[in-house]
Length: 325
Image 1: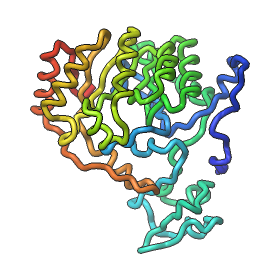
Image 2 (image 1 turned 180 degrees about the horizontal axis):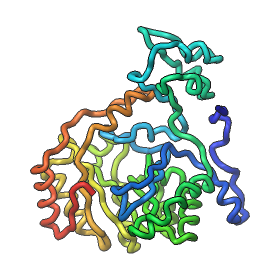
Image 3 (image 1 turned 45 degrees about the vertical axis):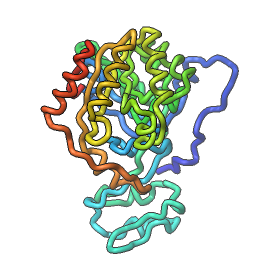
């Protein structure tokens, strides 16, 4: 496996306009492409998951998306303790400790030797650099399903807006082929980036986590002013928007926050609907695979009655509310 960290982060900037061919060779980092997705926008979709996120939400379902660059993953339950990874690593980054292999991330350069040598598939490199052309080759395989279902492509993450050049090139290609596009975003980005991307995007799925900026920062690492301003920007521009609220017990499910959220959403001049999404613990298992320490909060999944109560509160503001997306 090639040493994927020796590839430059981005192409050199140039004042010359991009040709179609050069745009197809624009590169970015992703960690997954999910086919037949039905919860990431209308119809049957292909979801492309971008690597890298400016937020560190303590309930994140995709903690493997936080770092922009590839990282080593290790599934303890699959490991058969054969020691092949230790013997294979020419950089001496893998050793045995307490009857299992331990990787020193300061030494490991993600060459992939140990991944290729692992008999049980316990080791993996999460994320890879790819081109617009390679992503579109996967997207184009399912055009017939998009056409039949009213679906398309959703760019998710992580945070797609962290890689604006790569995202814009993909959106341009989709637009040229009349493929419906959605961007699933925290809206934490410079307004200029949001405005540029909005011109090529059919639908925005905007995450709204909490209305109180201090609490938002405490649980995600960033305040919410930029997020709220960008949602307003998109709405005032007449863009198609669905607000998505992850319902996290003990964080944002209290009545004052729900009321504040409803008031904000109702003030937007253009809004399709609100999706309220019950917390699930999927990110906990994923976080255990990562070589870097990832601390996530443990919360209970809200029950059906709680979700209905929140939906009713938001409905009182005249909003169209969907439970579960």
